[in-house]
Image (cartoon, rainbow, N blue to C red; front, top):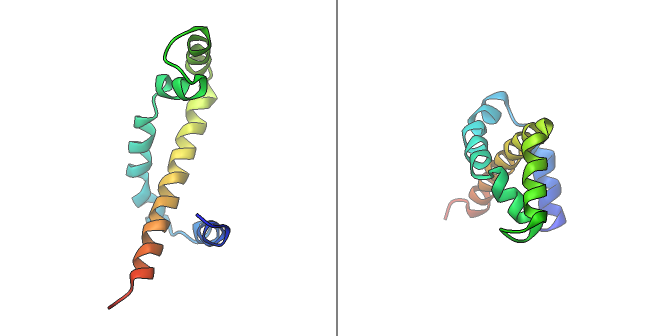
Length: 95
């Protein structure tokens, strides 16, 4: 994604209606459910085994605010995906 597109999406996010934000919530929850702590620990550690993975998994499981922040990130991602789909639909236009 180029910087112009990123800026357009970020500007558009500020103008989402309450209804649009609420419509994005189910997709954000779906994304959140897919990013389990073991999956994130695996991404951070680069492997499925070893002390680094175990340490990261334990840290994720015991950091209460991490899950809240992750949920917020996934809700924002859902809004970005929504705006990207809207932008794609606008670019296609009538033929």
